[in-house]
Image (cartoon, rainbow, N blue to C red; front, side, top):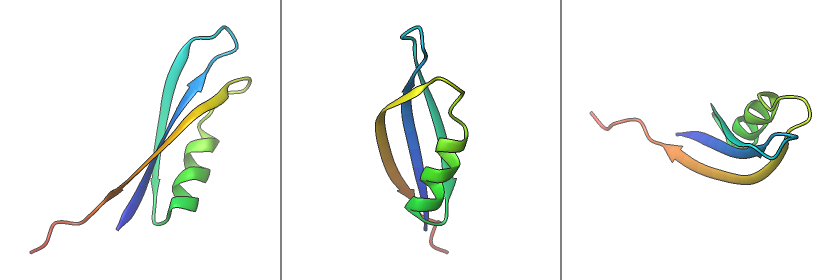
Length: 56
């Protein structure tokens, strides 16, 4: 099972945007998403989900 974290971020001028990343755990996915935040942006919302591999 993989975790997916989507961050709603805000640019210094107030423009909203999103960044998403996945990882084996929530902590890995959150760290990967945070690494994608451009300089000067701030996080407004954190959303999480899990992806499951299809069953054979």
